[in-house]
Image (cartoon, protein in one colour):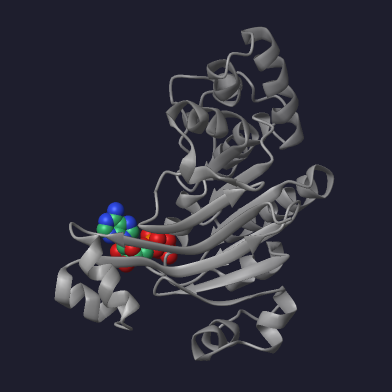
Length: 270
Ligand SMILES: Nc1ncnc2c1ncn2[C@@H]1O[C@H](COP(=O)(O)OP(=O)(O)OP(=O)(O)O)[C@@H](O)[C@H]1O
Protein backbone atom coordinates (compact mmCIF):
# COMPACT_ATOMS: atom_id res chain seq x y z
CA UNK A 1 0.00 0.00 0.00
CA UNK A 2 1.33 3.50 -0.75
CA UNK A 3 2.00 5.73 2.27
CA UNK A 4 0.01 8.50 0.58
CA UNK A 5 -2.50 8.20 -2.21
CA UNK A 6 -3.47 11.45 -3.92
CA UNK A 7 -6.55 10.90 -6.08
CA UNK A 8 -7.84 13.34 -8.66
CA UNK A 9 -7.08 16.39 -6.56
CA UNK A 10 -8.25 19.71 -7.94
CA UNK A 11 -7.53 23.00 -6.21
CA UNK A 12 -9.10 26.20 -7.47
CA UNK A 13 -8.16 29.47 -5.77
CA UNK A 14 -10.85 32.12 -6.06
CA UNK A 15 -14.33 33.17 -5.08
CA UNK A 16 -16.33 30.92 -7.43
CA UNK A 17 -14.57 27.56 -7.74
CA UNK A 18 -17.61 25.81 -9.25
CA UNK A 19 -17.59 27.83 -12.46
CA UNK A 20 -13.84 27.30 -12.81
CA UNK A 21 -14.23 23.59 -12.07
CA UNK A 22 -16.83 23.29 -14.82
CA UNK A 23 -14.55 25.00 -17.33
CA UNK A 24 -11.63 22.82 -16.25
CA UNK A 25 -13.66 19.69 -16.91
CA UNK A 26 -14.78 20.99 -20.26
CA UNK A 27 -11.12 21.13 -21.26
CA UNK A 28 -10.21 24.81 -20.74
CA UNK A 29 -6.67 25.55 -19.61
CA UNK A 30 -5.44 27.52 -16.61
CA UNK A 31 -4.96 30.80 -18.53
CA UNK A 32 -8.43 30.66 -20.13
CA UNK A 33 -10.07 29.87 -16.78
CA UNK A 34 -8.28 32.77 -15.11
CA UNK A 35 -9.43 35.11 -17.89
CA UNK A 36 -13.04 33.87 -17.73
CA UNK A 37 -13.54 33.58 -13.96
CA UNK A 38 -10.70 35.34 -12.14
CA UNK A 39 -9.96 32.00 -10.41
CA UNK A 40 -6.58 30.29 -10.48
CA UNK A 41 -6.18 26.58 -11.08
CA UNK A 42 -3.63 25.51 -8.45
CA UNK A 43 -3.93 21.77 -9.15
CA UNK A 44 -5.67 20.03 -12.02
CA UNK A 45 -6.76 16.43 -11.32
CA UNK A 46 -3.49 15.30 -9.77
CA UNK A 47 -3.21 11.62 -8.85
CA UNK A 48 -0.01 10.31 -7.32
CA UNK A 49 0.98 7.41 -5.07
CA UNK A 50 3.79 8.11 -2.65
CA UNK A 51 5.69 5.08 -1.47
CA UNK A 52 6.62 4.56 2.17
CA UNK A 53 10.22 4.90 3.34
CA UNK A 54 11.43 6.75 0.25
CA UNK A 55 12.13 10.31 -0.83
CA UNK A 56 9.63 11.57 -3.41
CA UNK A 57 10.49 14.91 -5.00
CA UNK A 58 7.85 17.28 -6.38
CA UNK A 59 9.47 19.42 -9.05
CA UNK A 60 8.37 22.14 -11.43
CA UNK A 61 8.76 25.80 -12.29
CA UNK A 62 7.50 28.58 -10.07
CA UNK A 63 3.69 28.54 -10.02
CA UNK A 64 3.41 24.90 -11.14
CA UNK A 65 1.63 23.84 -7.94
CA UNK A 66 4.37 22.18 -5.86
CA UNK A 67 3.69 24.10 -2.65
CA UNK A 68 -0.04 23.78 -3.14
CA UNK A 69 0.27 20.01 -3.45
CA UNK A 70 2.61 19.47 -0.48
CA UNK A 71 0.38 21.68 1.69
CA UNK A 72 -2.54 19.38 0.99
CA UNK A 73 -0.65 16.59 2.73
CA UNK A 74 -0.93 18.20 6.16
CA UNK A 75 -4.14 20.02 5.24
CA UNK A 76 -2.74 23.53 5.33
CA UNK A 77 -4.79 23.57 2.10
CA UNK A 78 -7.95 21.56 1.39
CA UNK A 79 -8.80 20.51 -2.15
CA UNK A 80 -11.75 21.73 -4.16
CA UNK A 81 -12.25 18.12 -5.21
CA UNK A 82 -10.48 14.78 -4.76
CA UNK A 83 -9.17 12.50 -2.03
CA UNK A 84 -5.99 12.28 0.00
CA UNK A 85 -5.36 9.04 1.81
CA UNK A 86 -2.58 8.54 4.34
CA UNK A 87 -2.05 4.93 5.36
CA UNK A 88 -5.46 4.21 3.86
CA UNK A 89 -7.29 6.95 5.83
CA UNK A 90 -8.98 9.79 3.95
CA UNK A 91 -7.46 12.71 5.87
CA UNK A 92 -10.14 15.04 4.48
CA UNK A 93 -12.64 13.27 6.76
CA UNK A 94 -10.68 14.19 9.89
CA UNK A 95 -12.44 16.45 12.39
CA UNK A 96 -10.49 19.19 14.18
CA UNK A 97 -9.29 16.93 17.03
CA UNK A 98 -8.15 14.11 14.73
CA UNK A 99 -6.45 16.62 12.43
CA UNK A 100 -4.56 18.13 15.39
CA UNK A 101 -3.43 14.66 16.39
CA UNK A 102 -2.39 13.86 12.80
CA UNK A 103 -0.28 17.01 12.66
CA UNK A 104 1.32 16.35 16.03
CA UNK A 105 2.16 12.70 15.51
CA UNK A 106 2.09 11.57 11.90
CA UNK A 107 3.40 14.44 9.82
CA UNK A 108 6.02 17.17 10.27
CA UNK A 109 7.22 19.92 7.98
CA UNK A 110 10.48 21.75 7.28
CA UNK A 111 10.04 25.20 5.75
CA UNK A 112 12.33 27.23 3.52
CA UNK A 113 12.28 30.19 5.92
CA UNK A 114 13.30 27.95 8.88
CA UNK A 115 10.39 29.21 11.05
CA UNK A 116 12.43 29.22 14.26
CA UNK A 117 11.26 30.97 17.41
CA UNK A 118 13.81 33.77 17.95
CA UNK A 119 13.48 34.03 21.74
CA UNK A 120 14.01 30.34 22.33
CA UNK A 121 17.33 28.50 22.29
CA UNK A 122 18.17 25.87 19.73
CA UNK A 123 17.24 23.12 22.22
CA UNK A 124 13.95 24.83 23.12
CA UNK A 125 13.11 25.24 19.43
CA UNK A 126 13.76 21.58 18.74
CA UNK A 127 11.83 20.49 21.86
CA UNK A 128 8.92 22.88 21.25
CA UNK A 129 6.63 20.52 19.30
CA UNK A 130 7.25 17.70 21.76
CA UNK A 131 6.33 19.95 24.71
CA UNK A 132 3.19 21.17 22.92
CA UNK A 133 2.34 17.52 22.32
CA UNK A 134 2.49 16.94 26.07
CA UNK A 135 5.92 15.38 26.64
CA UNK A 136 7.52 16.30 29.98
CA UNK A 137 9.93 19.20 29.45
CA UNK A 138 13.06 17.33 30.61
CA UNK A 139 12.28 14.35 28.35
CA UNK A 140 11.63 16.67 25.41
CA UNK A 141 14.87 18.59 25.97
CA UNK A 142 16.87 15.38 26.21
CA UNK A 143 15.39 14.14 22.91
CA UNK A 144 16.08 17.56 21.41
CA UNK A 145 19.75 17.35 22.37
CA UNK A 146 20.04 13.92 20.74
CA UNK A 147 18.63 15.31 17.49
CA UNK A 148 20.85 18.39 17.71
CA UNK A 149 23.84 16.01 17.77
CA UNK A 150 22.49 13.91 14.90
CA UNK A 151 22.11 16.89 12.58
CA UNK A 152 25.67 18.01 13.31
CA UNK A 153 25.02 20.86 15.76
CA UNK A 154 26.73 19.46 18.86
CA UNK A 155 27.56 22.34 21.21
CA UNK A 156 24.86 24.69 19.94
CA UNK A 157 21.93 23.65 22.14
CA UNK A 158 22.04 26.86 24.20
CA UNK A 159 22.55 29.23 21.28
CA UNK A 160 19.81 31.49 19.93
CA UNK A 161 18.77 31.25 16.25
CA UNK A 162 20.04 34.72 15.29
CA UNK A 163 23.60 33.67 16.18
CA UNK A 164 23.51 30.85 13.61
CA UNK A 165 24.21 30.79 9.87
CA UNK A 166 21.45 29.90 7.39
CA UNK A 167 22.72 26.33 7.04
CA UNK A 168 22.81 25.89 10.81
CA UNK A 169 19.30 27.30 11.16
CA UNK A 170 18.04 24.78 8.65
CA UNK A 171 19.76 22.01 10.62
CA UNK A 172 17.72 23.19 13.61
CA UNK A 173 14.58 23.11 11.43
CA UNK A 174 15.41 19.57 10.39
CA UNK A 175 16.14 18.48 13.98
CA UNK A 176 12.83 20.00 15.10
CA UNK A 177 10.90 18.11 12.43
CA UNK A 178 12.73 14.82 13.09
CA UNK A 179 12.28 15.11 16.86
CA UNK A 180 8.54 14.71 16.34
CA UNK A 181 9.28 11.20 15.11
CA UNK A 182 6.53 11.41 12.50
CA UNK A 183 6.48 8.86 9.69
CA UNK A 184 5.91 11.55 7.11
CA UNK A 185 8.30 14.45 6.61
CA UNK A 186 7.35 17.32 4.28
CA UNK A 187 10.11 19.61 3.04
CA UNK A 188 9.06 22.65 0.98
CA UNK A 189 12.10 24.19 -0.78
CA UNK A 190 13.87 23.50 2.51
CA UNK A 191 17.39 24.04 1.14
CA UNK A 192 16.66 26.61 -1.56
CA UNK A 193 17.74 29.64 0.49
CA UNK A 194 21.19 28.19 1.20
CA UNK A 195 24.49 28.78 -0.60
CA UNK A 196 25.32 26.01 -3.09
CA UNK A 197 28.03 24.41 -0.95
CA UNK A 198 25.95 24.45 2.23
CA UNK A 199 22.99 23.23 0.24
CA UNK A 200 24.99 20.23 -0.99
CA UNK A 201 26.08 19.52 2.60
CA UNK A 202 22.46 19.57 3.74
CA UNK A 203 21.46 17.22 0.92
CA UNK A 204 24.20 14.79 2.04
CA UNK A 205 23.08 15.13 5.65
CA UNK A 206 19.50 14.37 4.71
CA UNK A 207 20.51 11.32 2.66
CA UNK A 208 22.70 10.03 5.46
CA UNK A 209 19.93 10.47 8.07
CA UNK A 210 17.40 8.92 5.72
CA UNK A 211 19.51 5.80 5.18
CA UNK A 212 18.96 5.06 8.88
CA UNK A 213 15.50 6.58 9.39
CA UNK A 214 13.69 5.42 6.23
CA UNK A 215 10.94 7.97 6.57
CA UNK A 216 8.44 8.85 3.90
CA UNK A 217 9.79 12.17 2.71
CA UNK A 218 8.11 14.52 0.24
CA UNK A 219 10.59 17.16 -0.91
CA UNK A 220 9.64 20.17 -3.05
CA UNK A 221 12.25 21.82 -5.26
CA UNK A 222 12.44 23.70 -8.55
CA UNK A 223 16.02 22.44 -9.06
CA UNK A 224 16.49 19.29 -11.14
CA UNK A 225 19.98 18.63 -9.76
CA UNK A 226 18.58 18.62 -6.23
CA UNK A 227 15.69 16.44 -7.39
CA UNK A 228 18.04 13.91 -8.99
CA UNK A 229 20.33 13.85 -5.98
CA UNK A 230 17.57 13.30 -3.43
CA UNK A 231 14.65 11.79 -5.24
CA UNK A 232 14.15 8.08 -5.49
CA UNK A 233 10.96 9.09 -7.24
CA UNK A 234 10.37 12.39 -9.02
CA UNK A 235 6.97 13.88 -9.87
CA UNK A 236 6.99 16.85 -12.24
CA UNK A 237 4.23 19.45 -12.23
CA UNK A 238 3.35 22.02 -14.84
CA UNK A 239 0.49 24.52 -14.54
CA UNK A 240 -1.04 22.37 -11.81
CA UNK A 241 -0.85 19.13 -13.81
CA UNK A 242 1.32 16.12 -13.16
CA UNK A 243 3.29 15.73 -16.38
CA UNK A 244 5.70 12.95 -15.42
CA UNK A 245 6.28 10.66 -12.49
CA UNK A 246 9.13 8.20 -12.37
CA UNK A 247 12.58 7.29 -11.15
CA UNK A 248 15.39 9.78 -11.70
CA UNK A 249 16.86 7.74 -14.55
CA UNK A 250 13.54 7.62 -16.40
CA UNK A 251 13.16 11.39 -16.15
CA UNK A 252 16.63 12.01 -17.59
CA UNK A 253 16.53 9.29 -20.24
CA UNK A 254 12.93 9.65 -21.34
CA UNK A 255 11.51 13.10 -20.57
CA UNK A 256 7.74 12.95 -21.10
CA UNK A 257 7.49 16.24 -22.99
CA UNK A 258 9.37 19.42 -23.95
CA UNK A 259 8.79 20.98 -20.55
CA UNK A 260 10.63 18.13 -18.80
CA UNK A 261 13.23 17.98 -21.58
CA UNK A 262 14.07 21.65 -21.00
CA UNK A 263 14.75 20.92 -17.32
CA UNK A 264 17.02 18.05 -18.27
CA UNK A 265 18.90 20.07 -20.91
CA UNK A 266 19.47 22.97 -18.51
CA UNK A 267 21.14 20.73 -15.94
CA UNK A 268 24.51 21.83 -14.72
CA UNK A 269 27.23 19.43 -15.85
CA UNK A 270 28.17 17.06 -13.00
N1 LIG B 1 -3.54 31.48 -1.76
C1 LIG B 1 -3.57 31.55 -3.08
N2 LIG B 1 -4.49 32.34 -3.68
C2 LIG B 1 -4.55 32.41 -5.03
N3 LIG B 1 -3.74 31.74 -5.87
C3 LIG B 1 -2.81 30.95 -5.31
C4 LIG B 1 -2.68 30.82 -3.91
N4 LIG B 1 -1.65 29.95 -3.65
C5 LIG B 1 -1.17 29.57 -4.85
N5 LIG B 1 -1.87 30.16 -5.84
C6 LIG B 1 -1.67 29.96 -7.29
O1 LIG B 1 -1.64 28.56 -7.54
C7 LIG B 1 -0.63 28.24 -8.49
C8 LIG B 1 0.36 27.27 -7.87
O2 LIG B 1 1.11 27.95 -6.87
P1 LIG B 1 2.21 27.25 -5.96
O3 LIG B 1 2.65 28.24 -4.94
O4 LIG B 1 1.70 25.95 -5.49
O5 LIG B 1 3.37 26.99 -7.02
P2 LIG B 1 4.86 26.51 -6.75
O6 LIG B 1 5.15 25.52 -7.82
O7 LIG B 1 5.03 26.07 -5.35
O8 LIG B 1 5.66 27.84 -7.04
P3 LIG B 1 6.91 28.49 -6.22
O9 LIG B 1 8.09 27.63 -6.57
O10 LIG B 1 6.99 29.86 -6.81
O11 LIG B 1 6.54 28.47 -4.78
C9 LIG B 1 -0.02 29.56 -8.92
O12 LIG B 1 -0.65 29.97 -10.11
C10 LIG B 1 -0.34 30.50 -7.78
O13 LIG B 1 -0.47 31.81 -8.25
